[in-house]
Length: 208
Picture 1 (cartoon, rainbow, N blue to C red):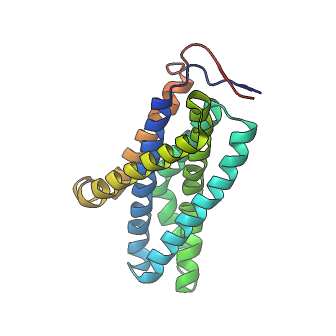
Picture 2 (tube, one colour):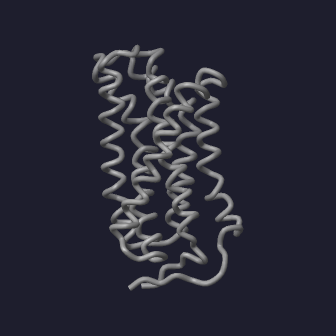
């Protein structure tokens, strides 16, 4: 099966993984902060955010595995990352609208439904990224087990860094909405460069 990953470099894929891991944690923290003005900072809020984060990632891993098998291309990867960026950019507007619509619900139901609508979709997109990166990087480097370990380690390092930056600096200093928009811009950089033709490079990678 031909894999049109023109000039794909494993290092670039690992950088995308790092950014995705950081964006994931930034969105998770920002999601909880978006809920707070409407539903508070209770245990219910954090349970819903954490539970839907895991649910979104699990869904994304499953869908990403299917996509990586049928469409193991840079186009598929960067399309998913760009969709994630757009969903993150919409969160400052979508989250308040959704939560205002659920204020009449029972507390736990309102929190869960709200997070399911505005938080679950970008998290599912994040989950789809790692299987595709593993597939594409394995084409470059071989040894899927070795590559998957590196991808998840790099993604986790990005998440650790973003957790500190988001909680200690960006949200307190520049604000919640600005943090989400900056995260969306960072996510969108490589997809936009790719679709503009700047990351195509030469040659083609093929997999059996």
